[in-house]
Every structure is written in structure tokens, then in C-alpha cells.
Image (tube, rainbow over all chains, first blue to last red; front, side):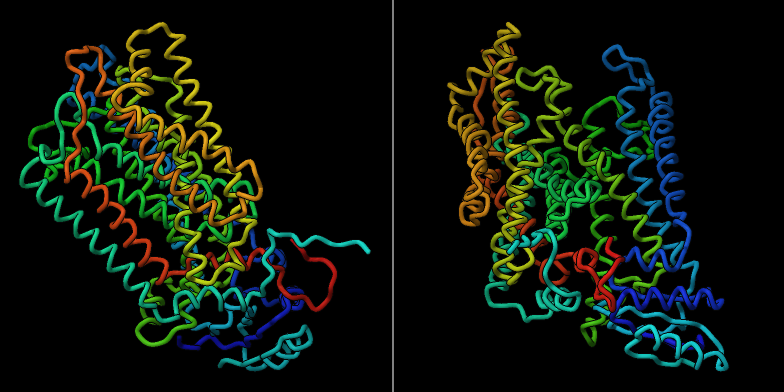
Length: 169
Length: 452
């Protein structure tokens, strides 16, 4: 990966140290942080203070689209080729609930996956440093900053227990 | 001195140890035993496709289809495999919503089992339709005949239910795998690094990714939950919506769902007990997990016990001679052996799990799981074949004569399933690394606060 975003990368072993560092960095005006963890962590989420993901909207819209599509397809196709079955109406709603339900789940799920992909791509991570230990047992905090601010950021990360600090220019 | 009991739901390892132990199952060179297993499964798969080729050439007569039993071993096996596929999503999605801590260590294997079981099940309706090359007529698409499928038919509901279930369970499995594949990518080299890198879709575990991922996983679980319950309900309506004696019952949906979960967990035991030994994962998949899985088996087995009894009661209480005859013949007719195999293996054997000693004895559980698999196949055999063999008109009663093609396709289906599963567990993390890590508190500089 090309390291073309200038900044400082700190590696942490302790979660409380990483959270304190994130809070202090945010207080100093560093908002565009990238924090790497091997698993989702609520403490880090809280420290970053990001709003709830809008992916739920994707799920909702996908589900509603699927439900509408399921009923519409079954009703329209029944009317397009009318076939009287067992004395039931040509477009009978109760049996079509199954089709509507299945497509609600199908479209809702696929829209949710599309949501993860699109929303995750909205913040480009290209050019930001990454280390394989972040998928193992370390927490990475990358702070984009210019050459002038780097020493100050490095000091802050070390004060909060960063075990390894590197500068990427 | 007070003794503090260890919480069995909480893994005792560190994050680094979890990564190491799970990745070892992939990075260690395959043993000769593994190659033999894959070879055997590939051989059975070959038998499946060779028999299918013969069936394509000769037609369904080769498979022992004869009036009045025009749904036989293939539909029995279809329902069997769909049922197997239910435990995985129950454990991965429903127990996720319930925040059951014991699901974490076992859910990946069960989810993979689900996907491969549904892939196996999906073969059978296509085999069963006879003219397999036009199976796509089942799908609604504009065609030169200006026809559309009949959406009032339960068979069409089945097409939508099974294809949705296969898509959603595969999606759920793959989404769960992404962070773990990234962990594999970071620990291998060469072409494997490139391959796993491509499969991990650029996952780095950045906060901007976790933020959407964690929420999305919750919604996927919420969507998969009603789906699990609906799929086998829809399968049960293939039978219940008809008016064949023994099929036309309102209890069919919950009865089938309980049976599906019961059979699925049976297969989980059959797979996980040898697997954790072979992959040296005994410290991650422990007695605690088997104890909880056993309780779920006992619960669903007891529902089946009740359902079996209720079926006989309803047949007697209805005063309907056709229902009564069907159930009399299930117990004392020519197929009595199948009827009693189903009752003993499912209703009675499951009751052994009231005893904790049995619930944590892996050998006993493995033996019980074989009985469950056997009993659940025979349950479907009794329902499908038993009812068709004894319809309304005694002069039209008949007996099924399964042929070699039926048995070879049944055997081949285990090969097809086993081949996919054995390739999966050696190439992908069989235990969910990131979810196990989520349960392990990260190290802290100070001892206070922060636990969640």
C-alpha cells in the first residue's frame, strides 16, 4: 500500500491508553483519525464519537423494495395470465405473502451488504499506513498531520502508552 | 477462602493466541488423513454425478418412481438436507440476537454446514422434476409461451424460499468471514497472500469499516431470523396444503421447524466432535458448548416427541378414517420399521440428554448424533413415502421399491456436502476469530472500568 498520506501511526497494546489518546487527539482538533482493531470495540467507538451508521436505511429501503416487488410481481403476473385455481381470486393475497416475505428478506439482505461496501468506501483508506499486527492483537491509531505537528502528536501517543510510533511522510 | 468460578462462556486466551490457534488450522500442511477424506468425498461426488448422468439418459424410472409413490427418496433427501441447514442460521443469527455467548466458538462451522447443506438440498428438486434441463421454467421470466408461474402453488413458494435462504445464508457466512480472511492474509505469504487479500475485499479493521460492519451484521441477523423459521414452514406447506392423509395438518410448520433444528444440531455434533479433535481446538470448543448444544437438542427433540404424539392423537380424535388408517399403518403397516426408527431415534433418544453426564460426553453425543441423522431421514421417509403409499383408495395402495440409483444419489449427496465442508475447514477459519476476540477483554494499563 502506498503511504502517501502524511501523518503519525501509533501502535497500542492497551485499549484504555488508545482511547485516552483518541480523546486527547480529538480535543486538539484531529478529527480525521483512522483507528485499526482486530475486533469491534465499544470503548473505541465511544472515544471516536461517530454517529450510528446509516446502513440501517439501506436495509429498510431494500426490504421495502423487496416487499413491494414481491407482491407486485405475483399480482401482475397472475393478472397477465389469468388462471383460476381452486376457486380462488385470480390475484389472491394470502398465498402471495410468502413471495412478498421472501423478497423482503432477500432485497433487505443484499441492500445491507451493498450498504457496507458503499459506506465503507466513502472514507478512502488509500495511502494510510497499515500493519499486519492490527488484525492480530494491536490497536493502530493513525493521525494525518503535517511535518510541523508530527513531533507533538508523537509525544502525545507515547504519553498514552503507544509501544511503537512511526512517521509516514 | 471463596472460590471464584471460571465463567465458561469467556475464552481464556489472549487475542494473539486466538489468531495463532485458528490460523494454525489453515497454515499447517494437510495430513495424509485429510487428503484421504477429500479423496473419499470426491469419489462419492463422482458417484452422484455419474448416477445423475444415467438418470438424465434413462429418466426417473431408474430411480424407482412408480404410482402411487411419485415423491420418494429424492424429496425425502431434499427435506433432510434443508433441515440440516437450519441449525447453522439458528445458531449464527437467532442466538446472536439473544446474545448467547456460547454460539461464538461454534457458529462459523455451523454456518458453513448450513450453506453446504442447502447447496446439497437444492440439487434434489432439480433431480426430482425429471426433465432437469428445463428446471429454469420454475423461475418467472418473460418467455415465448407468454406464461407465468402459478404463485398460489406451494412449490413456487419453495423455489423462492430455498433460493432466498441459500443467498442470504451464503451472504451472512461471507460477511462474517471478511475480517477473518484479512487476518489470514496478514499471516501468509506469496500467492496465498494475494488470494486472501483479494477475498478480504480490502478489509483493514479501520473504525470506518467496523462502524458500518457491526450495524449491518446486526441487521443481517435480524433478517435471517424470521427466514430460518419461514423456510422449513414453507417446505412443510408443500405437504400440508395438499389433502393427502398424514400431510394435511396445521401443526406441520412448527413441527417441521423443530425437526429441522433438531436434525441440524445432530449434524453439528457429527461434524464438530471429530473436527475439534483433528484441528486441536478442544480448548476453544469445550464441554460448555456441547452442553448448551445438547440442551437445544433436548428442547427440539421434546417438541418432536410432543408433535409425534399429537399427530396420532389428532388422527384418532378427528374420527377421519383415512387419517386413522394412515397412522395405524405407520406403526403397524408394511413400513412399521421406518415408523419406529423415527420415533425411537428422535423422540426417545433425545431424552437421554436430560443427563448432564451424557451432555458432556463427546463419545455418547457422537453416537446420539448418528441416531438423530438416521431418525430424521426416516422421519421424512415416513411422511413422504408413507402417506403416498396409503392414499384414499385401498386398491391404489402401493409400496416403494428403491433402486440402486436412489441409494447412490443419497450416498453421493453426503459426498457432495462432505467435499465442500472439508475444503472449507482447511482453507478458511473454522472458528470466528474476530467474534472470539470481541469476547476477550483487551489488556488495560489501569485495572478499572471499561468492561462491556
